[in-house]
Image (cartoon, rainbow over all chains, first blue to last red; front, side, top):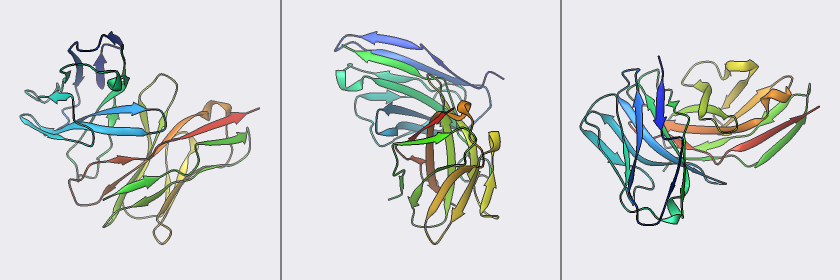
Length: 115
Length: 114
């Protein structure tokens, strides 16, 4: 199993550009989420999905869109990049919340810089 | 609302000495508690979790954590630190029996020196 994969590893954007961060998992997990990691702030939840076709907002959703057309994939779209979105982005997946599993598995991250 | 506090930004320990990384939490009901570790330029890796049962939970790489309900704490411990344990450690909490989301602390950097 590859686990959770993310592409690209690094990206530099100019203000106003759009892009999609890719995330895929091969563990048949129902639950997927996107976090951003900023110094001194830990991980903050951007969006999450509890299954194909179902998404919801997390703590810091503004400026980001998601969709979940398949169980495996959960892309994160930046509509118009801003310098405040410079961060490291992590995708995670887990079995259905509330089960005894409930451990999140993280991808290696995407380091995004917006100039 | 649920929350996690990691009061120390950094913990410094000499190799061979015991280490403790502190975590306190707040949830309305019963907690699910987790510790994750992040090595440089890597994603987070699961270390251990508390769901129910014994208050002392054993995890990967010789780490353990003690759940203390009265003090709402879940401190991470290891009897003998290694230089290779140097990393960023995150505590996280979720309320048991709900679909609430996982809330992470701000992280504690552990530095183990020779």
